[in-house]
Amino acid sequence: MSIDVNNESGTDIDEQAVLDVARYALARMRIHPLSELSVIVVDADAMEQLHIQWMDLPGPTDVMSFPMDELRPPAKDDDEPPQGLLGDIVLCPEVAKKQGEEAPTGHSMDEELQLLTVHGVLHLLGYDHEEPDEKAEMFGLQAAIIDGWRAERGIEGPSPAPTFT
Image 1 (cartoon, rainbow, N blue to C red):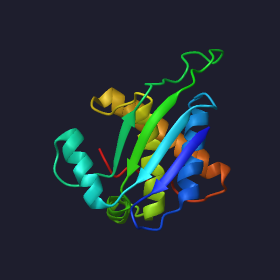
Image 2 (cartoon, one colour):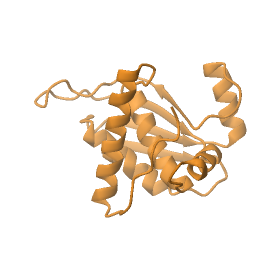
Image 3 (cartoon, rainbow, N blue to C red):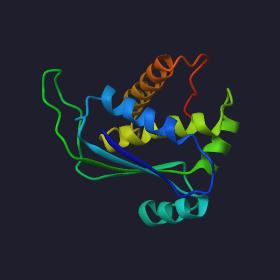
Image 4 (tube, rainbow, N blue to C red):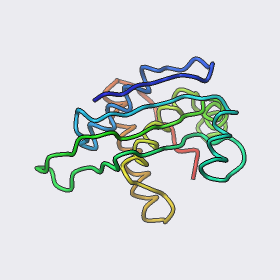
């Protein structure tokens, strides 16, 4: 898996954890090991510009996903996964910090960025949360991936709950 993390935000983040959770999510979703992903970390001003340009919505957001080859997980366990460019995930640590602090259980900016990375990966793979059934599926996968990754790393305690809807 080729994953690049480019921190342009000026904020110190746990880049290794973002890389690791992205790699875990892609492996869990059975994406081809030679596929490529880019994670870009930007400040609130840059994220707001992207949010306006692509979503026509004001203010910065937490995560945006820009798919390239529209890769999808294989339908069956014995299907060969396709190889390609997944696309870009853009994260904003300023928004992540605020969301983590406001979460019911409270968690760190880095924990929120890990959650947002998985969320972004799932969006790149075609998952969405516009409809209740889509939301249940996507957020269920997201929780399972985060829980599995945390367990593999020996991280105890509750996983961060999504702070977005």
